[in-house]
Image (cartoon, rainbow, N blue to C red):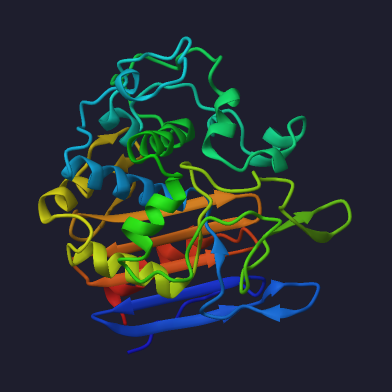
Length: 335
């Protein structure tokens, strides 16, 4: 079986598609490092921006299954720092499904470019989740909790802080122990940009003035948080889906809740840590997670009815969403 995709000539990254456990498309394009012309390989580690929210959600759902938390637990009950104007009755469920109304340190409806955050605030100072607290703690609530859906980065930073409060471990250490290690995701982790391990791709931003590329090291925080920032490889994402769907890290009942529509607006549907896309042929939804930062774009989905795994990642911020749409369209008609 073949999948004939039209990949743009300037695409830099990996496109991987698997159906019924058979690889039907697997191509690497461009460079992980342009200065030394290091080619991208299947095992290259890529930054993935907000895609890391799925790991935070998984860890929180595990804690709920262990009865260390509940969906109705409130941030006022858990967090030990002063919340100022933030509603102490915001629940875990509302943080998970983006209905909390908590003030967003990066409101994507108001700011398109994440690098704007760091023009007056050096990004290299942000290496722990708690370092982000000053960016939102003095802001007013966006809306009353539970009244609407609005994608929110602060909500997942707070979920990361809740993991740290409950487990007494850095969130990334806890996620490594409870998700990455059990799923044998040996090449996935949260790394500091000025201390990257081997096989990591640099992320590049295009400068229209000089018509050249530069790295995003000053355009994102130095290390990821609960809002995102994990480095992954394509094989490790495949392992995550496999272990998740085989109910090795969450129970069947919790997985059903994760993939169920928990909040939505006119254009989007969200579960817990995953977006839910509607198949135009069957009208059934399937889960996906994605991320976008300066120089970073990522999307992965698992269409359960088709047994179709898609992973597209770029370290040039290329349009992975267009390629994902084409995969879904082509697999409806011709493989």
